[in-house]
Length: 259
Image: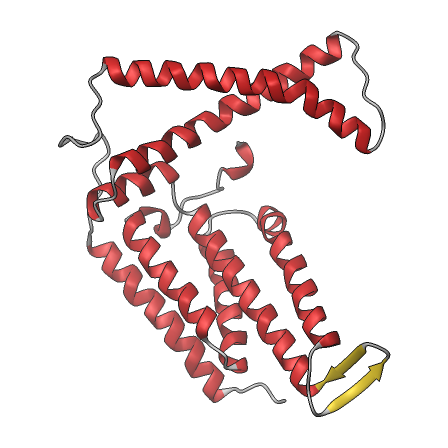
């Protein structure tokens, strides 16, 4: 869990999670539907800079977190570049055919992938899941049965990791050895699956009994321990990201990338 502890909390941590969710979803939608090569490139650059500047995490952790998106960028872009269709052929060999159109389409898809990754990581790293679901319930009237289900699942994750560690230690003490290769994975699945499933069922039953004892009812009006509200910082955040998007578009017009 220490891996996800930021070195510092930036101003994005103080934004209402529900409002931030709408802002980032709008940015993701714009990145998805945009087909302008220059605009997509500068969107990617601006979002990567924001991730580095305002996530509050060190560069090493960000490189670790974004490595799957970088690999996805390389795979998706290279596939389109090598096997895409186009009329202006640059180089061909067998099934591989690189054209001007496939090259730009491949890079466009890659830029969108990195934009999605940067925005998604920036939102995930600067938003506490607990406050997000409380904000969705209070500001957007999300049904409590869905929100509390997600909250309970998130709360159970550390316990699940502890149980996996305890099960692993117990198997080591007993001297149980696993076969190499795929057979070993199947043997591990047999040794871990049933005990973890049984513990999860017991825990779910205890949680249900505790909620029933406290007269928890999904449809009744309720108060919240964590209160979330919209504030001036949320308006500043909205204007800031509008400015970022407008700046990326302006730079794409002023400094277009030569084809």
